[in-house]
Image (cartoon, rainbow, N blue to C red; front, side, top):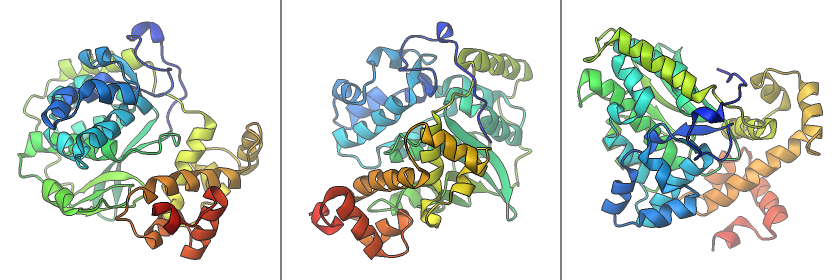
Length: 349
C-alpha cells in the first residue's frame, strides 16, 4: 500500500510537529508520562532528550513529529532501564485511549471491519507508515512498518504498536485471545520469552515487517460498541484533521525499503524501484540529485544499523552480518573497518 503524496494542512493542527510529512497524533502517547514515572524515570528529561514538547502530550489531537514520537519511547526505555518499555506499555494500551483511530476500530460493526479500517486509516493517524491487511498461506496478517528509513532505532514503537493492535482483537474476543504468530523487524532482544508470554504465541524477529498473524475465524464477531453513525463521523474527522498520509523524502523512502530487505540479502535496485512504483533508471536519476548512488545508500543503511546492533551485546556478530545482508561475517568485518576504522569485535569492546 503506497501512501498518497498529499500535504497536511498545518492550520488544522496544533503546532507541535516538526513538519507536515510524517506526523502522528499525540493520542498514541496517552498515559506514557505516568508510565515513565511509575518505572522510576523522569518524564521531563525523556521528553527533552526526544525533542518532544510535553504540552503536546496533553492534547490527543495534537500532531507530533513521528521521529520525535519514536525517540520518546526509546529514551523512556533508556531512562527507566526497562528494555521492554514499549512492549509492556502496548499490552496495557486500550483502543479507547488511542483517540480517533481507536474510536474508529471500536465503532466498526465487526472485528473484521475493525481490522480492515485499522489497515486503511492508520496512516492518517500516523503518517509515513504502511499498514496492510493481507492473506497469505491460509493465514491473515495485519502488518505495520514505518516507511521513513531515517528513523533507525524503533524497536519500542514496533512492540508498542503490535500490542495496541492485539488489544483491538481482545476487545471483541476477550483477554485470552492470542495471534498465531507475531513478527518484528528488529533482532531478538536478550530474552524473547517475555514477548511470547505477553502475546501468548510464537514471536519471530528479523522479519521484513511487523505483523500479527491470525486465522480468519471470529472476524464476523460483532464489536461490542459498533455504531455506524459514530464510525462515519470519526472517520471524516480523522481524514480531515490529518489531511493526508504524509510523504517522506525519496531518499528516506529508499532507505526504508532497503532496510526491510537486508535480511534477505543485498537488496537489488530493481526491487526497490518496483516497491516505489518507478522505473530503475528513474530511481537512479532521482538519487543522482542527492549526489548518491544506490550502492552508497545501501552502504549507509548498513552502517547505521551496524552501529545500532553492536550496542546490543546479546546479538552475535554472525547474526548482525546476516541482518545486514552479508553472506559471510568476514564481509561485514571488512565493511566495519572501512566505516569505523576498527573491526566490529573491537568496537563492541
